[in-house]
Image (cartoon, rainbow, N blue to C red; front, side, top):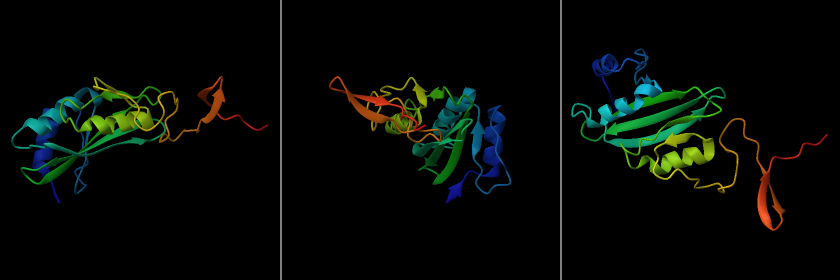
Length: 166
C-alpha cells in the first residue's frame, strides 16, 4: 500500500496552519482543525499532484469527551492513501460541515453517522435518519447510549427512557 511521502506530508503541513502528524509513524494520519478541514480535503482532491479523488472510507469515533471524524482517501491516479482526522470538541452538540459537496458518495455515510452517533453535518442535502425511527431520541453507537423502551400510548408508538428499578 502506498502512502504520502514525508515530503508531501510536510508540504501539506506548510500550507495548512492547523495540520499535525506524527512523522515517526509509517503511515501518519493528518490531524486538522475543523476550521481548515474542508479546505484541506478540497486541496487533497483537486491538486493534480495529490488527486485524492475517492473517499474510500469514512467513520466517527466516540471518545466519551469528544468525537473524531476519520476520512480515508485514495488517489486512483497515484495509487496511494491518506487518512485525515478532525476532532469535534463539543460532545454534547457535535457538528461539522458536510463533505457531500466534495464527494457526493459521503451522503449515505454522513446520514448513518448522524443516525447512530448524533453528529450533525451542516449543509447536508438530506440529513435524516436511515436506520432508527424518526422519533427515536437516542444514538445507539454512542458510549453513553441507553436503549429506549417502546410503548403504545393512545394508539401510537412512543419511546421512553427505561424506568429504573429501585
